[in-house]
Length: 403
Ligand code: CTP
Image 1 (tube, protein in one colour):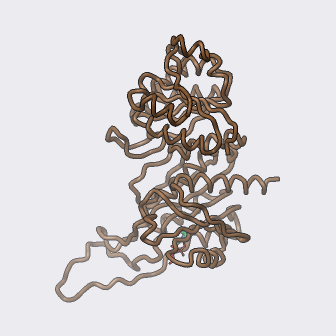
Image 2 (tube, rainbow, N blue to C red; image 1 turned 180 degrees about the vertical axis):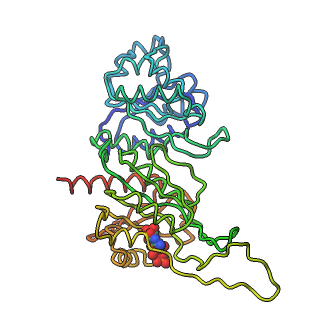
Image 3 (tube, rainbow, N blue to C red; image 1 turned 90 degrees about the vertical axis):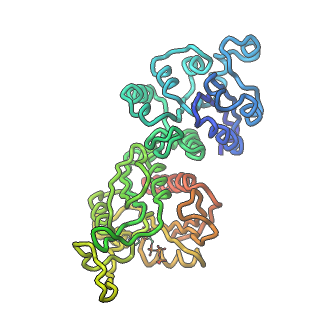
C-alpha cells in the first residue's frame, strides 16, 4: 500500500503516455496522492483534462505560467513529493536529465528536486539501444535514479524489441519496492526461470508442442530481475524477446532445457513455469517421414525428464526455494497440493486453465499459491502482476531465511 505517499508524476511525450493514466488510477487506489506535470509533447498523447480528472488536481504544464508559479513554484512542486516518477521517460527527457538541462517545467523540476526519482523509459527499440541513450541511462543510474523496464515486445512503431514502457503494475511494484526499502532486495540472489513450451522432434520438419506462450515465465524473470536478482531464463520456442537484464538461454527440447537448467546451477531460487512436453518421440527420424502408401507411420513415445522434480530432489546444489506450476481445469487446489508433494517442490503456483479463463496465451491469470502450510487464492490479475507478487513473496521468503 502507498497510503499518504505523494507522487509527482511526469508524463513526457510518447505513445505509452496512455498507460500513465492507468498508473495514476492504480496509485490512487493504493492510497497515494498524485500530482502531474505534463510536458508539451506529452499533451500530444493525453489531454490535461484526462490527467487532471484522474489525479483530482490541476495539471502543471508551464515553467513560466504566472498562475502556476503563484500557486506553487516549480521548486516547491519538485520537493513537495516523496518520489518523482517519470513515465513515460522519453529518450529526449532522459538525455536532458543526464546532462542537467532545465528548459521546461519537467526538466527543471527534475533538476531542482532533492527527492528520489524513478524513470520508466519508453521509446523505439533503436533509440533505446543507441549508444547515446545507453550512456545517458548509465549516467542516471550512477546518479541514483531508479529505472523500471523497458520491456521487450511489439512496439507501436511496428518494430520489435526492448523499448516498451513497463506495465503500470510493474511500475507500481517498483514504487512499492522503493517505499518498502525493497528495491534491489534480491541483489546477490541467483534465480533460474523456465518458460514456454518445448518442441519434441518427430523428424527434421515436424514436432510435438503445446500452446504455452511463455508470457507468465518471462514476466516472472522480469520481475525477479527488477528486484535485483541475477536471473537466467531458460526458454523453449516463443515469440517473446528477452526481458532486459535477464540472461536468456533459448532451447528447443525438454532435454536441452534440462541441460541448460543444470548448467545454471547453483541458484537460490528456481521457478519452473515452462510447459515441458511430457513425452518425446523415441528415435526421431533423421529424414522427413514420407507417405509410403503402405499404411500410417507409428510414433512410439517415451517420457521426458521431469525438470521440476529433478531440481527439487537434487542431493547437491538443490535451489533453496523451488517453485513449480500446475495447470488444472478442476479441483485446482487439491490437485495442486498433490502435485506439490509428488514433485517435491516447495511452492506451487496453480493456475486455472479451464477454457473459460482464457489463460493460455492471454494476458491475465487466476492463481493459487500453494505452500506446505497454506493455499492462498489470488484475485484475477495481469500476468505481470502475478509475476510481481510472486517475486515479492520470493524476496520475503529469502529474507526470512537469511536472518
Ligand atoms: N515440469 C517440468 N518438467 C517436465 C514436466 C513438467 O519441469 N518434464 C514442471 C513444469 O514446469 C511445471 C510443473 O512441472 O512447473 C507441471 O507439472 P505437470 O506434472 O506437467 O503438471 P501439469 O502440466 O499441470 O500436467 P498434469 O496435470 O497432466 O500432471
